[in-house]
Image 1 (tube, helix red, strand yellow):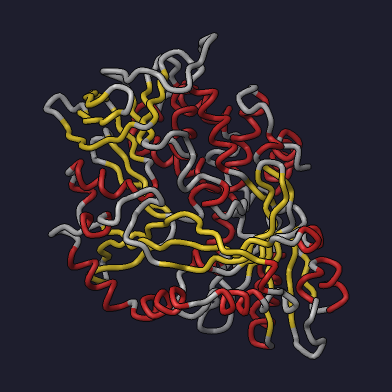
Image 2 (cartoon, rainbow, N blue to C red):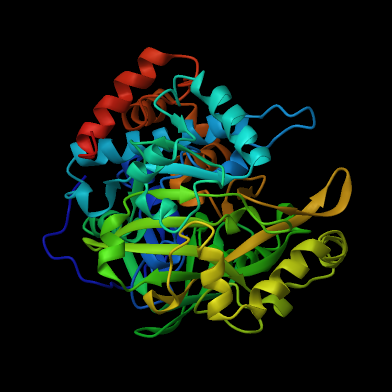
Length: 503
């Protein structure tokens, strides 16, 4: 696999690439590298609408940055009607995050990622609850998870002195009479997915046969009789252009839905999207920032989407420590932070109008939640922060707007329309195109998601020894259960943590 000596920041648009990647985020970067590793002869065109890659959902200020391993996110461990806690989703997400770490470690060993410390840091993950009912839930969650070797580093305490040691802000200004409890896993991570994406894209476009067009927007996509996809592109540098590609990947975040609809594939019919914007309080007081070193997740409010789980969050962005609290949900009809106010209206089609109406009817609590969130003043938001940090002062915090998330709406076997959370791969039956819809924990599980794309869209190649051997080289636990094989889990984790400098 040869590299170019001189790498321009943006290159010419290829007329007939094998692969076109729409969107310059973590998903396209991951798929592009995997495909070039599988077949170095592939030609790839990356199309990004903004002046730089990773400015939307992958950007550090638009992404929570939690290495989602289900160590602290309570919504991944729902409580059953009998009071027991279901940990199956937590186990799956933890395994998927480990796969991501294995891949990133492989890229470090291969020299693709030059500086892992620029994107991944060790930050403890904690869960926090108060009140006897929620404390009992957290205790049961801890007991269920700690039986699994994936989670046996987890600690649980109700002791105020221990909590004050682990997270001083939780106890400041709080009465000792108020019962609270926390769990902690010291080996949690904070990830700057924007910095990771930039390193991956820099490597990709250093290779022969890969071009990146920035400030270039895909305006239409249509499959031709020969099976190729013709894309119309409006480029700032080259004007209106067309290209044809054998395979198209739509990894444009919230913008994926519109392009999926334009593709006309039957598999994309019936999908809709519900946009939710996020806002965070950012601490301005450096003394407070330095007192806190953890990602602390609580329980979501009634009617709130899982992506709105409140958290008091240590971040490391471009080498600088920050402290955030949120998110506070807002509403905008845009599907991207830099999108159009007409995005939501334009997404309504005859095939998805019934699912959209059904979701609106069945999710009145979500609608009321969003209305209440939009009405909040700065004082109201700081009052919410005081649930975590009772001594918080309004003047120490400012509000910032993070990214847009578009939740999936689709038909289901038991309902006209259902609001889905997570990330979904929508692929054509012939494997010539795939789109990603949805949100969290997408970035953290990007490697597993991209493997699903490969299995759906390159099924014949994936059956060959050459591709399977290369995949195993990149993902040594592919096809194995880390939850069932403790030796494999511990061996690969030790290797990955060392390569990523988080051991």
